[in-house]
Amino acid sequence: MERDELAGWLRLGLAEGVGSEAARRLLAAFGLPAQVFAQSLDALAQVVSPAQARALHAVPSDRLAARLDATWDWLRGADERGAARAVVTLGDARYPGALLAADDPPVLLYLLGAPAFLERSASFAPPGRCLAVVGSRNPTAQGAANARAFAQALRSAGLTIVSGLALGVDGAAHEGALDAAVDDGQPATIAVVGTGLDRVYPRRHLALARRIAQHGLVVSEYPLGTPPLAPNFPKRNRIIAGLSQGTLVVEAALASGSLITARLAAEQGREVFAIPGSIHAPQSRGCHALIRQGAKLVESAQDVLEELHLPAPATAAAPPPPATAQDGSDDAVLQALGFDPAGLDALVARTGIDAAALQVRLLELELSGEVARLPGGLFQRVGQA
Image (tube, rainbow, N blue to C red; front, side, top):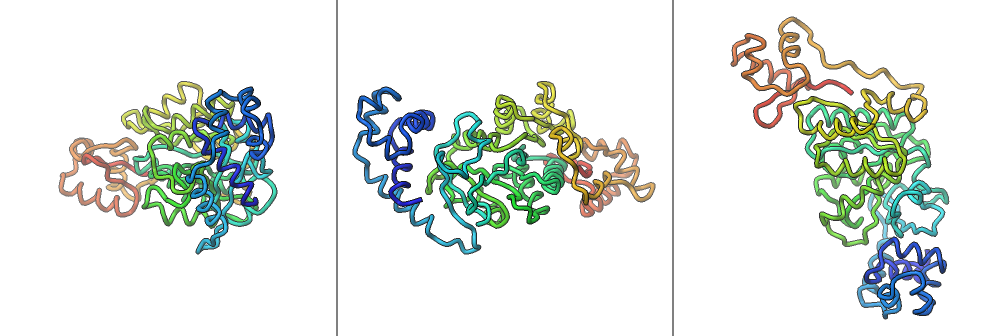
């Protein structure tokens, strides 16, 4: 993209009161931004409101020049790990068709990622080969393990995993996809973020974002320099849903933003999947609500693949069984714990084991990865997805 063309797209995005919906109407009516800005005030007012037409006719501010300089320098700059940079517009052949068909597709997308995915003429998001994996920012130990295991298995089956780089389930899903990254010509995972691509939020995911940029893509509709603003995160969920053939919700409270992604997917005719959990866990209530509303209940990655009519990978190993005991003592503790969170007093009552001895055994199980310690003095058995 030439500098003048980029300036036109940025000016369209900066025009006061002209959102993406009005911008799309203008582009459909007149063509590229240069043609839009060449129209008379009356011609523009036939497509958008008079106030929007006047905003488009206004002399560009210094803000446009500053943003153009920053974006142009960013595009021409080199990433220390070799990631490529691009701006993809509605007029670009690389713009994903699945997102075009979704509600309110962004006019501009900023991309950071592996050069192979940005330099080709085809879409960076393989049509019909993307699956969103989303969920709680505060998952249970089992929920985080499920997110990672499902994402790994689904990436091994040839799906690109799309998520939002948030703490919890999102991060685990990205990591699982990266665990299964292969050179098959498509991104291992796509992170859709709510900031400019010159920032990483949350900061603790800086290393993860860099790994994604090496083996996948980081995507944003927000200009460089955009800080982490609360309204931007639910808004970006429409891109997560729009890029994806389906959405898998791993864990979610009833007020979770993941339910927004699931609702958007359902409204667009995309598949929605949910993993059930304990009736006592707040993080499971959102998934249970989705299942009651018609989401597909899934217990394994194979359930997702079958619903999408995709074959399981030929080399996939059978999923490991849930954690099991090795002797009578272990078996008593794990069986008494089950898969719902339980406190020490409840386990003493169930097992009859002295509290001190039980605490020692629970610590051993925690260190071996079979039990997780939760807030509030609770323990939970950790199985495999």
